[in-house]
Length: 196
Image (cartoon, rainbow, N blue to C red):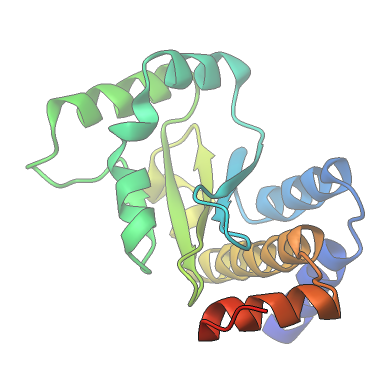
């Protein structure tokens, strides 16, 4: 399949997904096509004046692994999460970095026990500070998996970036507050210091 056909199919399928259930099915279809046994898509979206982001997560990771990850509060310790919050480059895991912390060695070891042996996480960022990631995994060693094919990685990158754009846009539309003309006028007075 040509690259432009892959981009068109992914974009069309995601845009036509009208519910979270349909979006899950679309992600599963495309991520499986490119070698993923499990996926997690997550984003932190800031809207209007909210101090905390809206968290959006869709995942097919084993529920038993999700429970373990949550119960042990691994989110705050996971180096792949920390990486995706600030970097733009994908991260392959488990990392071969010899300086990896003991807690991250434990996370990767435990994940493998649940069939999440290796994978890659693709981070995404907006110019307004929002971020997200698509993490895909396999029960195989990374080098032996379909992820070692650059064309599959490119397609997964397209899948993740399209998801991030569509979810961000949808969230902004749902959370946009429309002010009346009178409210806008009052805000203008407050901003300039005029009181009537």
